[in-house]
Length: 92
Image (cartoon, rainbow, N blue to C red; front, side, top):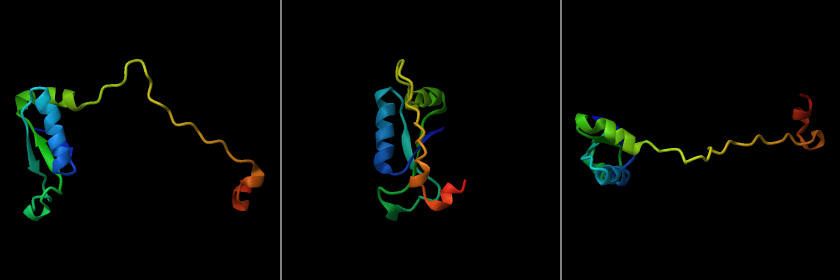
């Protein structure tokens, strides 16, 4: 079963390493449309695992939130004073 997608071979090998460290065997296969040997290490890869290990593989690859630390929220930027805004922005 396909559990992950990689942009290139080095990224696919990194994902496979994470899976291997957690006892999940996997293979990387060139994705449809990227199945050109001339691409060498470039080109997308699908990471495949046995169906019996797919759930564990997805758990391994899903990032865990940091304990008790909320994700930072983007702060809204304050509107500059009217005198510093372009003339067309002063109209609204």
